[in-house]
Image (tube, rainbow, N blue to C red; front, side, top):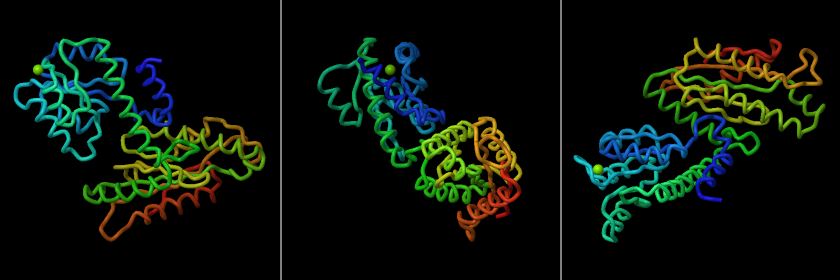
Length: 320
Ligand SMILES: [Mg+2]
């Protein structure tokens, strides 16, 4: 197995991220030469999304928004050179990219300087197709592994969506962010209807499969950046919805109900319908210094209770 196939397999292993569409490899090339950008892009195009920056400032800016797994950084550039760019990159909070220097100079003195500056490796010009691919894929794999392991602690083992611990952290973090920006933060709390009866009728193995299918569908149904699907407990899920108002959120709840019903997962023991459905409670609030995230949860929870009371397979909006 060559290293590139290994990266491919690794991406399958991390498919629990893939289905949310938020985790494919990103490579950033910072080089003042368009020719080098084109050559490297062509060699690496199968490994992930490629982005290019023409100079150091642009590279630092792009790295901040793209969070690349690997950065190929030209040493010889007008303006900020590669070493200066590297220093700036390393000062960014949460910087986790692997930096590979690209240079026309070879020799131990340059190698040492590159590694001292915080690079993980370097590639010399003129480019050697096989060498470039091997080095980049090795560092890509390492970076993905590190990222994967770091995320593992925040994932629910059964469904692959985030766990309760991550939910608590993210809700507190989003609450503070929305308080500063004075924007509306919304929450969806949802629950599989008649899940106990489903388990009793089909067994716990089938119950687990049902939860996986629901989690997968929820993850696919949340497409906006920053939306976080979590398993809240048992057959309950919670979705954090940034920058979402009271007016918008109920429509999203209806949409989730439709998406789950459309799966047509057979439910053999319920009085009303022959398939699996969910009930959804929603709430949205403009955070204030006096209020707390738990008020948002309480409002969504009360709305969920109402959705159950009113016959299930529906979404209700709570007041917070
Ligand atoms: Mg150059």
